[in-house]
Length: 427
Image 1 (cartoon, one colour):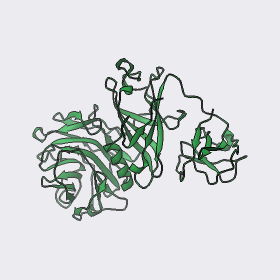
Image 2 (tube, one colour):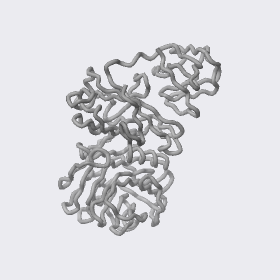
Image 3 (tube, helix red, strand yellow):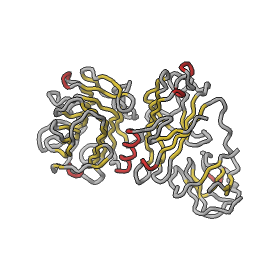
Image 4 (cartoon, helix red, strand yellow):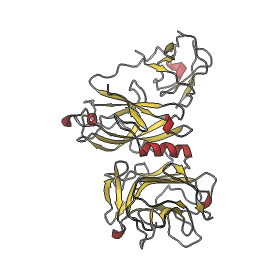
């Protein structure tokens, strides 16, 4: 039987749009996923007879029954969705569009962070079958036909704790985005979330979750870090995080990291940090520590005097911040077409800051990527505190993207509580 889908207003972004032909009224378009663009609503009872050839798509997830305001206006009567498997558990996940920016986000890696008894393994009183969580699946559609790409950062079957990252083709800024999860299928024996790194598109040059795989890069670029003086893994803002001690000269580095934006290339760099000492230290950056006037590094720096900076070897762009020991998110963006330090945008906890900046044409190098120290400098200014979710991109993210990302990661939601994602009842 077909799945009823209510057409939402102003819903036009989708993976693939095709002009349906044959007996369809002119001007009607359909697209896959849960997004539908209809330029004119047909009369009640109009039947859409759509063949594979007229759709010219291998993905038949669009074959659904459509309704508006609860009144069926058409049925795509081919390839109806099969009933959901029985004896398996399901939930809908709804992203609150009011917590997103003012424009849609595409290829967005959304955080799903759950702690709940139903996500424990069966042996611990829950509904998940495997200790590795491989039977926890995510889908685009309510019929659970089309799987998303996802990665599991961590799963604890004893406590029912899951941290996962999913790539959604579109997060709408005007209506709630809904996707689906399923768990408890005993026949699952392998991971279904896609190839390693598939959550992160080509814009992501390095992604470090800093969890149990402390030094691993989650992208396909595999820029694994070297751990100096035993940086420890501890509970982070999201899953695991890295804990640094300046007194122990701890840091993690990658020499000559290929693919990072250099020169004046467009870029974004972001992380969560939790400081453990009110002292001057540089906690994330890449490039080189060379003399004043060359500006080859691109790094986050705290002065020890209530100022957070982006520092580029002798010049800086900074804003006032009173030291505390809470988790915060900082992001620096060099937009397309910009080339000067005073053109860099800095966001703090999702909000664009008013920055006092020097003027310096950037000539960033890829000599070294460093967490917990100044790149290519092993004498002082080591970091005391924690880092989590370090990312470097070769594109300048927008304010809308940053707002969406901050709200998702700061309060992702949980089963039974509100937040960025609301979870439907188990069915």
